[in-house]
Length: 125
Image 1 (cartoon, rainbow, N blue to C red):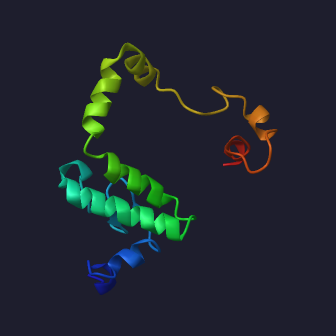
Image 2: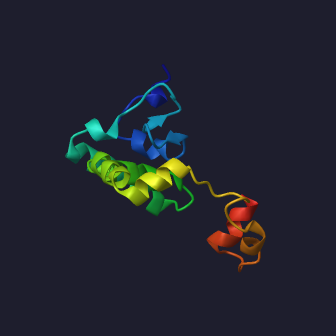
Image 3: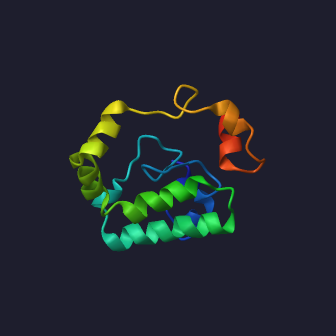
């Protein structure tokens, strides 16, 4: 195993420069996973705040936003998913399997929005 991949007090600083898989919090190791819902609250929040610190230090690390959200919301995620699916509108949206594509929105109109807006960026992504 590469020694730079082992957990150490300085490894968090290296994580931001490497590929992080937000849903699993694994670094360059697709097989290694961490189920955020199974972590103690203190550990989840520690990891969430580290991810927040990384994105604040470098706003280009947008993957850290997802990592922050994963850990910050993990304790309530199962309940929120059940509430969403138990509601008739939520169930209908889930069953419709909606996507954001040229069939569901007018990408040409979005392309006419002002530069620097999310709507303008969407058609080009």
